[in-house]
Length: 108
Image 1 (cartoon, rainbow, N blue to C red):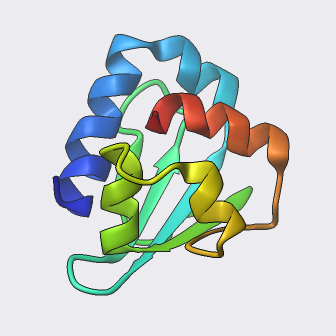
Image 2: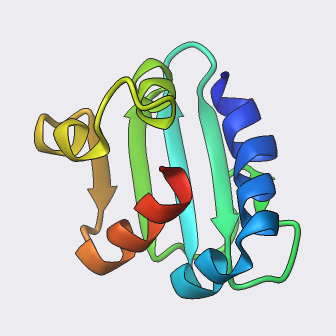
Image 3: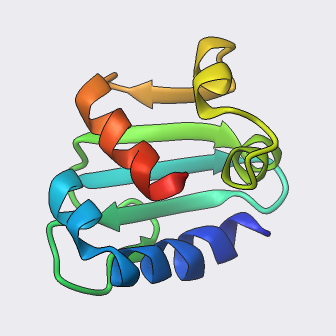
């Protein structure tokens, strides 16, 4: 699944199915995805709908950086997010472990 589809279709679908996850995250998060199929997106779980938008909008609590290929592998469970983070393939800035754990529930 392409990054654009993951962020613009799959993530909103998951938030619709499990709104409590969005309420638990309750933050603005930027995704900076590099390489072919990459781009920038904003996830805003402080809202009740229209959570994902193109570009970096508003002030984020965290920015997540990964290559498109690695991000796709993480979402499809071919690569563990924990392993990706430990090997530098997945970066969080600033690192907020509590927020990252809540986000993992949405991504996993």
